[in-house]
Image 1 (cartoon, rainbow over the protein chains, first blue to last red):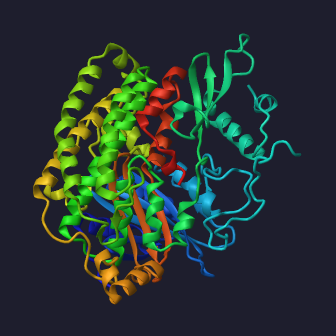
Image 2 (cartoon, one colour):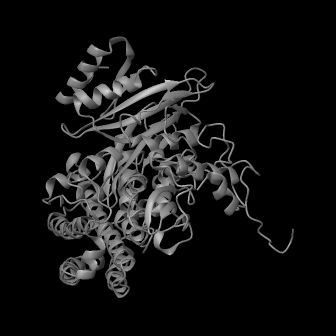
Image 3 (cartoon, each protein chain N blue to C red):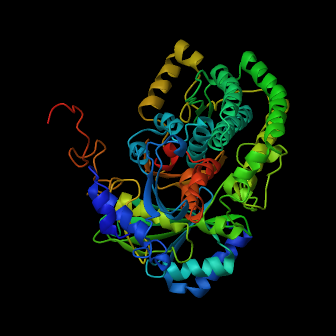
Length: 170
Length: 430
């Protein structure tokens, strides 16, 4: 599929493929958004490059996707905005089902802190070098990762400790 | 104060592991100023738990503050008390079925949530929306913005000490509820937008009410300005409180009025115009100071800009259908459903299967909600349910900013700063 990129995006993609030739696995577009799939190991380098060279100074969001495939099951997506050029770019990395781990980009964008905590909370993806990797929406005592596809919609009975609804009884 | 001391004082009944880790993380925050233990004979240092059941925290927000006398040394936020797992629910619903859930996310401006979801699905499935529907959506969104900002204004001023003001702003909100009732059939959770348009056209009655509101509201707004702009107490409470510098706002990911009050004029309506925002004229109010007073001015100006947009929309409102006339993409009108067999079958099919975007398509679509950038990322697997739906909630982003700017402030100012940030927990907790 041929890409229809605006000028600033084209520049960023060209710069990326020049500096990180074999680290860029795929570049594609879907309904007008541009996605760049990169090597998991070099996400921090690439983030730094995009921030410093192409003004992607604003990280709007980080979120996970459960692809539910046997290979490279989880995907982490970074939603970046270049404030100078006024364009949006999505970075993607993939990781394995067994002990998924991605380097944290909190050193590049501080706003990744909570967003990565949410990904960890919902999918169980570990972020190495994260300053405060705790669950954010679920309590720490919860043992499951609710947005994984195998987690049932109705929840798991007994997985959350609830107050006694009839206080008079023991 | 050591972690063990805290643990010995606070006996949590539930989620012990969670509490332990939270206090641990508070202890770990800026470890450089960690020399509390011995030199505190008056025990002026303490850990204060604020919320989740605290009227001034606007919902179920919990702050764990480490205090030194009256000033906050460091703070940690604990969110998730209103977590309902809407993203998980979305994966098990059709797109249209999920729409009412979005009402309950940012429940202060349900209209913009509906529009955000519908636009994302329309972008994903390539649905064309009639011109008139765009304008109706814009009117609804701007009314929702005014309604949300009015609630913020009332509660924020109440947090700063003036209770009667709250009733004034609620008087105006009540009028917006009445308009919503006439426009959409619901007062609070409107669910008015449909994939491919809106549920129903504006009635003459609703039109009259909107026109009247657009005429009378600027006068009310002037009264608010008169009361607050030069009010000594109000200014003293808000000036230089909760200061957020521009670079910090960008670094921590502030969005919406919080970002604009810190001197960066980022607005999705101009950044990536949706609906017909590129055809109306409006300004993006921006302030440089970054304190709570700046946020006040930004939101007040936004309200008058919203009135300007509504007036232009009413003027430009084109004639025509309000929903796309393609039975594969949108619900047929009720007339068709009641009086023709095909209409009924299509209605049934829409409810049963719904719209099926192409397999593997991904989209991200954002709108400027009253709180900031509200984005929906949807990935489709070709069926009627989204494979993954992610909500980029503005309150979530702003609460992260709050955790960072609250350090070094006074305890009495925390409620004002929270009020200035204007978080909605339904949205932040998803």
